[in-house]
Length: 411
Ligand SMILES: *Cc1c(COP(=O)(O)O)cnc(C)c1O
Image (spheres, helix red, strand yellow):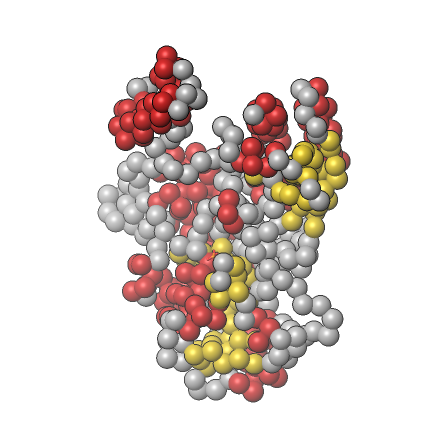
């Protein structure tokens, strides 16, 4: 298609101007300007560029956390035009927004009476705190006053809603009795926050949700990572269904961490409570768009997500992929070898867990070239080498990865 019709006139003008500038600088010959301009055209009108995540961090916040499955990508594509997000096509009357995505979420979490979806995990907490605790108290352990990342602190977020925090226990130890002593007429709910990006070990104690649920006030559990059911490889990571079965009134989580879906915040729990939250005026400001609902539903009902596949990848197979790639690339003259590596979940999930992996090891100066190449590849630097960890790269991307390394070797 004509570039101007596809991308709009601005990007085309910009590419031509940059090509002409290169000709003036003598970097390209005047007759090469048209081809150079075409090469400089962006792939799409959007500014975000697809990259290959070879960091070995499966959920990399700077790279947009979970990559969507093929099913979710297709669902987004199909929902992009007019869709029946709020219309019942049978009757022709207005219907509950996102009902099929919410139904799919409930199906995956049998112990949830109802589900609601907002813009992200932080929004889920804000909605719960505003609707249930504004002007009242949230009882929280001092060991769970966490900073998520980039200076973002959950206690500040909670206080911004007008709720007061009633801190109990200590950094390393908080008992059920500590909570019981703090509960009174001002208590709106007890909040448990999963320490999703650090671990405290040694002389520690934390109250179980099952014990807290007997204290006579709602128990809200922020599990963070969005596992809906227990994961065999991540036994320490809390999941929504188990927390609700243990007595949590409400569970909040992110959609784009271990669930492997789009950015969103999940609220799962007692039917009446979830309905109250969904009807609160603030819910309108936090609601998700049709693209998110489409991606979430396809994530929930579709095949394993890329995140689930990366978690479950067989280390022996990763080693074979690394050896195969290294052999092919050293034939092309690159100083490359296959090395063992350790990947992590990242993105606020499974802290302290390392996943055995395999990587391509390249000279350090490859890192910048790979990042700025035609297909950007982000690796990680370790002991003066640039490592491309294959656990975060889908096997189907090996050829693109090899092509990127070849192009960096030439550059
Ligand atoms: C990631 C995380 C959040 C924030 O969720 P977002 O989706 O990034 O807004 C809140 N609480 C916990 C425990 C988390 O791990």
